[in-house]
Length: 249
Image (cartoon, rainbow, N blue to C red; front, side, top):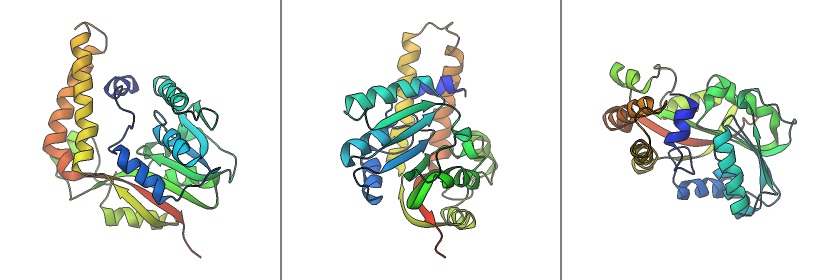
């Protein structure tokens, strides 16, 4: 589906991934954030992580995303939380963004590793911006068990797009990084992310004329999302954020 259709489906979400607020803040605690630290978040969506962490721990930083709709929501949220002076948002292709070398204590890409062509490429996008001793956060799906062909077709994935948790560790190590922590989504947080979209789309469809240019696609999106989540994704898909540091020498 297009970016526009995701903007509609996730218009009621603050966190654009299968995380609850509790898990988002737990991740911040795990990172041992300190006042004055700076974070770069590529494909930041609505910027909830940057703004909530800035409010709680006094951090700051930069979020980059392609969606004007999401960035407008990010700026409004930062103002609401009183952190607009500490976090900024830039519109652009996150995969082409080049930050000042070593300028950030935390660098992150949460659930959007396609910006680097996959896990390893995203590590390389983030690595130059991370200061020595900093942390890298990558949010990524994983297979909870080998998916059948029908599941791959339903979620529009190739077998090697993702791997098992142990396979994810292999990819981390192959990229020259060390896994130091992780916070995984669970079935309930996946449901909140997916099913929350169903309600939003259903309401949008009820309030929108049937001949609206997006209406037919949104009906297909809703039907496909429900069927795929309940039949395949809930069983075979896991998701988590992996906290990384450069491998010890």
